Length: 311
Image (spheres, rainbow, N blue to C red):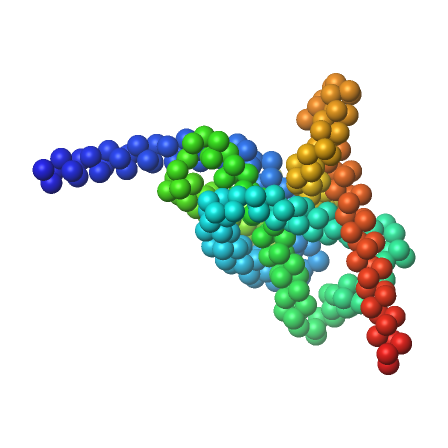
């Protein structure tokens, strides 16, 4: 009897793992685009950090990302079981935050006079130029911001995964296993790739300076060295665009009339529907982010005026 029970248990485990494997693939397909956005955003987060501090910053953000997942996976399961209606409002808040951050970056880059004087930004620029300044203190804010952004994107990835496997008929145990696998694989994959990307220039320099390097090796090193800053600039731009795409997509999906309106525009155009949808989501993300930024700027100005009047 004990042997038969053991065989039945192993058979159940085998069936469970087969289901988990299938559902993990379903979740991976649904979230592939968002994972790419997450990679671009996190690579962008280390721009402006000194080369010697890039890996420590990435490691700090990666640890924060694991903590985020430890919170988000059980939270997603509990919310989906007890209060599933809360998922959409939470995602909407995340979408607004991403759109706001993206708009702030764009406006600060192209129309800085529209924003108040950014003392933190100026202090960071001065610190980067001064070898005697301890950058760890400056990096703390950057790390916190990166972990906040990771929290929102991680929540989106997990919620989309949850929706996909729920539609596939997953039980609570299967949901927990699949979400845990997605969380671990995404975190290791993204931050491992980011660490590799930011060290391309160091690898190129190493190839150039090798005493026994051939001409081909040195040319490869020179190519890597020259390509590294261009790649980082591209990822910085891609990360900002990703904020609008993801933020706008979340907002559109959360407001049914708005989503139907955008779908109507896409159908009227009739060509390249996927690309047009992404473009509309990006425009929506920028517009909404700019509105949120304007409101926050006005509120901060009013508060600042009241404080100066009080003094």
